[in-house]
Length: 176
Image (cartoon, rainbow, N blue to C red; front, top):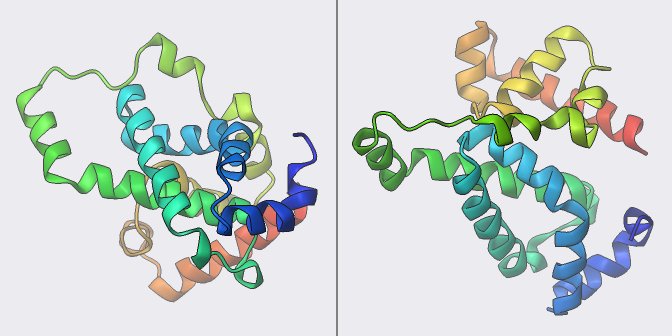
């Protein structure tokens, strides 16, 4: 399983053919990282588990939409997980849950022990330029949209999008 990225083409072909072992292999290999990204956004371990399951359902259902010419499988998976988490925190049910449980605690000792440091992602992101690192952190770990980051940092939206693309390209080079 450690060689999964090298066999990405075969894995993607199996996934597109609806081979259940492909989704199982993807889950085994990528779920810890995806869970970490989701947890940073939803702030609740239980919600993160639900969102992770929803993300894998979306991955399964939309496998034929993956296009290797647009990016690596890992990037596609993270985007699905991130977008599913953002959809979750914007949902009416999530907002209702926050209102009805005013003393809801998002982080406990168990949750704090699982962070991006443990999966090595934080260390990789630390290699980016400080302004790019901040944008990646806001978008991928805190759940901000590109528009929200542009407003928060007083930057043009195009600049934010360019910095994200550049950062992802740099991260891809670091990882491979």
